[in-house]
Length: 368
Image (cartoon, rainbow, N blue to C red; front, side, top):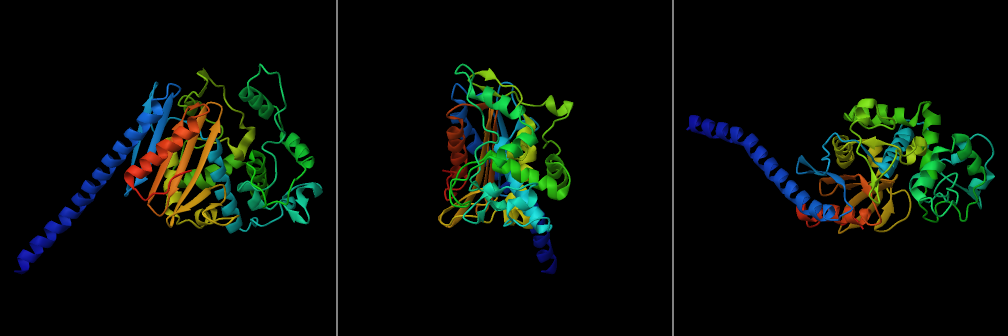
């Protein structure tokens, strides 16, 4: 009897790893099918060029790539405003490190006098910079009007490339707030850029070095950078808009949208945020402003549906569009990277993400 029990126990122990492998294989197959179905709709648009999709769930991950030339897990993409989630997480780390407080008046970290950055005794606070209620304009300095025959992406690229940090602070002195900070939503790259400058000041190193040393290196993300090496540049996907290849976007936009990364790296980053184990990640996911079903964390948009959360951020710049979506209560994350942008790209990416999520979990909240 004893030997029979031992035999059965041994057989069960041997079977458990096989069961895990089988379940993992099933999950990977389901992910691959969901990605294929959703990606088919995205790539059916004649303007689509290339697409990389990664999904995490059920203890496994699946990646798929589409386009000509065909990208892969190590193809480098500019991730545009997904950079802002790195900025928000670094600010959370800075508070934990005691370098700053998210409720600090930003003027504590600026040289000179900025009476214009407060209304009715209400100053812009650091957390306002990463949930788009600072009242700062979209860009500093703003993109000037130009000849009608010069496309906006070209004027945007030229304006950002030609603006120095001194120009940024000079324009910051001229800002006129229309309402007390924290009371009106207004998407601002300038606010995220200023958050990056503040991080550089309190740590004494560049924003790119902070990303590398405090996020990318610990998580094993070797290809997440602002300035790629020659080898990395050889893997950079060419971006397209209106069927035309786009030149490199200037790095001056820094913490607002200058990072480049790969699907492999972004899945590592998504896995870290999905786990919500790191104190900085948990802080970055806490609603900082507003109440109700839709809130904002530190550069994460947060929506609650049926008692479950979806955290998301998208990014666009001439030639590229991206999206990172976390479902912490469903144990799932989705990363999508594209090297083409047009008026409908973000809508198609949302459709793609929601299609994958609902195919894998019918109760997953939809990204609006």
